[in-house]
Length: 290
Image (cartoon, rainbow, N blue to C red):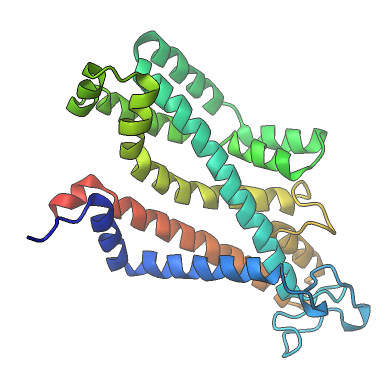
């Protein structure tokens, strides 16, 4: 007798049939491995801070696959170093946002009534604020540390996950398996951890992959304005694009200083969105009936 595959196994099988999502997952895995591995390589070429004025603004060659910038620094090494920071900020800030959103939305949906109404009005109030200007204000006034970036970006992306999780909990709190757990003496935290959270895992995974590109784009925008990464010890894709634009001119285009950072950023954002769409379709309960 053949065992029936579980929901996660069936979801993974549907995801593998999505070529765009599968290719995106492979690309992102390779990008993470290359960016992380480049940080352990100790050679002059791999040092993104090494200055060689004699070799400044060289086009792509065998010695420098992505060329060099105005200070002779290897563009490829800087793109990989920027990937470590941009991807790290994206993942950590998205996890902060989802943690806040899941806890807040689950609490509102579980209690319902006036508590739910008051908590969701607060969400609407916060959502009406221009959070972009709030983050710019925070990073401008306070010390531009990575911790502040993590918290500021994460604190602006938790509202939609809170709404989605709250709706899911409202639909699940009166389900038969929840009522059975209550009748056996289980309390709210235990019910949430053992019964509700596994049913929210699909939503959380999808929103994680869709939140990461938004955070990366926002961080790149801040770095482009000079409010994100702090040179020379920190570098991000947005900062590389800002540096590249200053080095481009009509007489000598020097295209490589902006095309490679911008191309990697665009490819990463597209891959994350394709993967998020694929996960959303794969984890959709309605797909079980197709």
